Length: 275
Image (cartoon, rainbow, N blue to C red; front, side, top):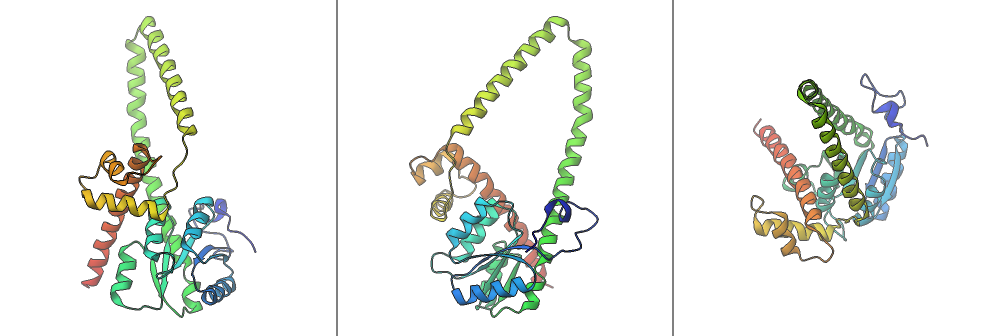
């Protein structure tokens, strides 16, 4: 099966390849073997590139090991090993991938829970092939949002350049030779210090935030309150050997960004429900 080439399909601003959406890379998570086989067959009929998982922890490991290997995730809501919403939360925290939830439960509250937790769609089982043929739209929409964000970052960086250039000119015109040498030496010392910091950082073991570890983190944050939760207090409440303050600080930053996205999404859902 042909693979989706990101260099051609996704980075082209004026369109996508002629083969798209053929080759769309889909990860399917379902603990029902029969449903998983049927879904795989249907998705392959759509000419998608399909990877299947029957456990949420395996799915999360697969995503972490292949960070740029998938375009979209389809996951069931109810699984034996974990709640599908927890997997959705992890993907929202660690990766910028659209997630579609699937279930036989067509209750409004469950559907709303899926959407408010960050799902881009909610499909009712048995799933029709027509619905699967259209999942590529969520991928395109997600990529467009990425492009907008990168453009905004680029414009900010461009805006900073003239000011930096003026500062450099001002510095070179007023500094004498002695101060320039002193500044150069200081810069070299700073660079050496940064290199030492980088090497020490690389030696630190990377923490894998499992579903269980993340739930401990969330429990600690909820106990403290999101506004009062700081890395030091969270670390004390979690009491996990080997976990550092830096690990918690990084995860807390991601978690707050995730909650911010959910808040924005909830406002959109509320606005639509009033129509």
